[in-house]
Amino acid sequence: MIHYLRAQGHGQPAHTKDMTTGNPYTLMIGFAMPLLLSQLFQQLYNTADTFLVGRSLGTEALAAVSSSGTLIHLMVSFFMGMAMGAGVVISRYFGAGEDEKVSQAIHTVIAFGIASGLLLTVVGVAFTPTLLRWMQTDPDVMDEAVEYFRYYFLGSLALVMYNICRSVMNALGDSRRPLYYLIFSSVLNIVLDSLFLMVFHWGVWSAAVATVISQAASVVLCMIHLTRKGEVFTVQWRKIRFHGRLLREIVRYGLPSGVQNSVIGFANVIVQSQINSFGKLAMAAYGTHAKIEGFAFLPITSFNMASTTFISQNLGAKQYDRAKKGARFSIAAAVVLAEAIGVACWLLAPRLIAAFDSTPGVVELGVRQARTVALFYCLLAFSHSVAAVCRGAGKAFVPMFVMLSIWCVVRICYIAIVMHFTDNIGLIYWAYPLTWAISSVIYLIYYLTSDWVHGFDKAMA
Image 1 (spheres, rainbow, N blue to C red):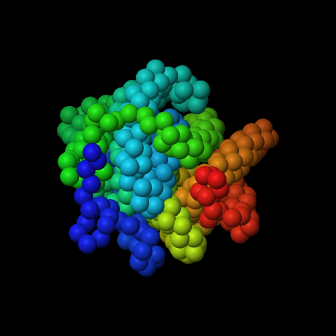
Image 2: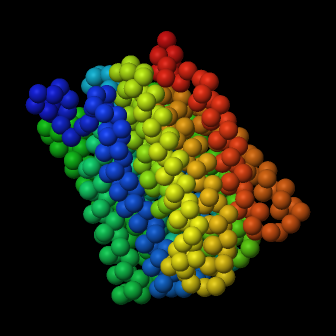
Image 3: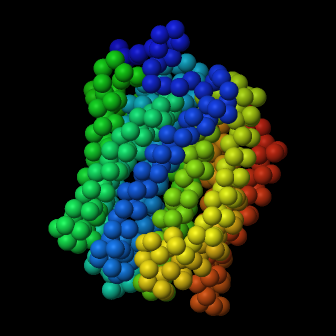
């Protein structure tokens, strides 16, 4: 038997949130706020590494950590996309009140996460040196980079499983518990980073070890909650297996998101490899800007995650007008907020970059990149927001094709062409606003002309 705990007088499990009733705007904001805080603390993991490594061990160590942040994104992004697909399936059946399918989907995606985490560990540890050489990592920082990323990939199981557990809880409308667990593990990460780097004076590898330990702690907390008897859709170890039909649905909605994330990651690896060819100052500046941009975009990412859950639940309940209303609100809020953040980043760029590394060359290049892209954050937000709507509606192939063609093929072709004629690093920075603008036009046309609200209905016809 599945252990359900229904809230008294309501007919829905406790610790979940039914987003098919009530004011859609307040529901989405209320759901997005814990997600925002969760994303904030998630960023603290790697940012603590970057900040403390830069301050404790210097620019070369910072370059080693920053040299291939896109490598980690590329390796894990596919599995994160699959977790997003599972969230769509769970949200849809939860909104439709089909509890048995919700439970089977949860056990299936946990089995997938365990298998994926183990596979990623083996591949990441074995091929780290090869990938770093392919990315033209500066030989001066190669040894430290190999150490850092090998230790990081040893924690792949924890990294994948936390995101799987978070996706499960978010799909059920619970965005608070993942936040609580992440706060604990983020604080633990900062404490361990400070201890390993500033007290024990260990090498750059110890920052990765701190991250792995902290991520493992968050997974333990998540699984304690999910396996507790009497809780919502209790996970039972003996039931963790692949349910064929649910696995096919998860793959159907998750594979496009996984491919989308991977091609974006691949394109960014190409960009990173070009940046690496300009030396360690450019590597440090690019990595530092990536951390700042990651923080800056957290509110938009949170709105997008809330939008996907909201739309999936309401389309599962066949409340089409309500789903449209939520989509319009999430897109508008994300675009306005992104532009406000972009203006702030443009103005504060020198101070923000210098907070990580005050080396003049790093600050100069970091500010140059920030002031190239920041005022175009509205375009990035629009593209991501419509992509989130598509995923929530079961139309995950749409953002996959857009990202593959524009953010991967066009971006790579642009960089190859401009670098053939010049070695101006500023032209690499312009690859981002250019591709954001093209994808935004395509997404706008699709959003206004397609029948995205009936995506699930047509898929099951």
